[in-house]
Amino acid sequence: MHNKKIYWFIAIYFVIAAFPINFIPLFETTEARYAEIAWEMVKTGDFVEPRFNGIKHFHKPPFVYWINAIGMKLFGVNGFGARFFEVLAAGLILFVTYRLSEILLKNKNKSEASVYILSSSMLFIAVSRIVSTDIYLTLFTILAQYVLFKQIYYKKATSNSIFYGIFLGLGFLTKGPIIFLFTILPFILCKFFDSSHRKVFSFKDVILSTSTFLIISLPWYIAVIIKNPELLNYFLKVQTVDRVATNRFHRYQPFYFFFAIFAGTFFPYIVPFIKGLKDSLKAFRQKISLFVYIIVPFIIFTISKSKLATYILPFYPLASIIAAEYLDANMINSRLFKSLSIIYACIFPLVLLVAPFVYVDLREYYIPIAAYLILSIILLVNIIKKFNLLNFTMFIIFSSFCIYSLLPVLGPNIKGYKKMTEQIISLDPQKKHEVLTYKSFIPSISFYRQKITVAALGKEREVQFEDNNEYKKYYIDSKKDLENFFLDHNSFFLVTNDKYINEIESYGYKCTLHFKQRKDSMYFCEKQNL
View 1 (spheres, rainbow, N blue to C red):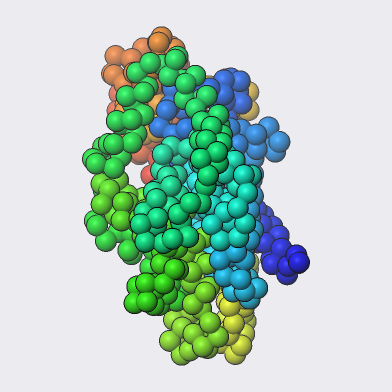
View 2 (view 1 turned 45 degrees about the vertical axis):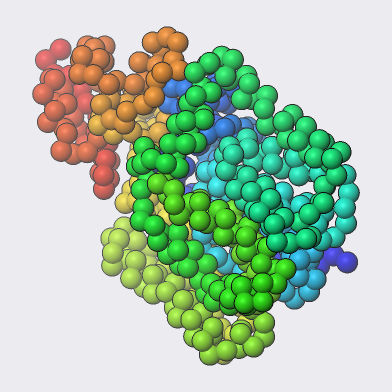
């Protein structure tokens, strides 16, 4: 029987999450990178070789670029078009989490609780609005786990093996072999101690699943490797081995990094999760298998040199199901869990209270901030009087909405360049002038302006896959090429840190400030004594 209550909840979550996404600026560098590549696909019609600011870019497989390009085709080249399918993926994750919890928990109230827990986990809330690979990898992980556990614990069917191959293939097209860390590797390990994980798929099922996976995942890889033969080594060594074994991508974090991230962004649900882990280890119950699907990727990411907080998001749906199983009435009503939850909830109105003192730009928005603050206090009082999981969840979701609705104002202070680009567009609607980013790299300007900016002496780019010099129109990596740019341009928009203005003006330009920003400001530069 369909649970209309939980479906309405997911629909409300989707609307709340989607409402501000067109107004929030694309933040550098992750969001801007994925959005810019998708827009260049739309512009060029080339959906095989991703290009980032005019240069071939093979850091990730193309699924995210493809789906965001579809979003831009449907909704325009803007924040809504770039983020729509991210929010939709988040809603689907909640739905699949509920369906999986029905199989694993066989309890309606606990299945509902798993959705409430996941939807109010801060890492999930944050990533559901970010243009990146992580929300899609999480979606395909939970879909693959759903059909796998359906095969193990519910009903065996050939269709499960086919869908397993489809979802693994889509995950592989999203972020490469990392999908296996959350699916195939723990599944194989569980075979050693959990009889339910043995003889899950027949030989025929394995052939069907493998064939489906290869049909979905390989064509793009084959196509780009044929066009760029050196890519095979690049995928295997640079983007797989080097990411794990080296700090090539400058993402080193201490070994305890993911412990802190998981505890902080899965709070307060980390309490029932740890209780469940302890109970399962003591009795070595069958439920220990679910923990393997979390512990295995957690260990691998912990020993990896490259670490980002979002890497562990794909196991949050299962973690939410586990936490829901152990978050019984006694724990919800316990003084410890209630106190931790209320203390955690108090952080959000405190942020609203302090924010205008930290960011001056917010002070002119004191009326909506005051309204948010009053509403959050009212909801907080209601939680204190009548504490339950749904009330707490709705408070967290409402609070996150308040904070996200303020991000458009804070954009210039936190790596958002939407307002700056709007100023450039207003000054030059016909896009007659080039935009030069000097000793910086800001792809969101290219996205919002829908014209590739010229980057000079900034981030080093990988150009080994370029077969001609067309990319040099957008990528200046030497002073000689910079001088050639100045010879060809009597005027241009300049985006750079204020400390570099003298360097540009030394070439005979007068640069006038038009938009002041925390890190990089925007100038209009004109050559003097023409």
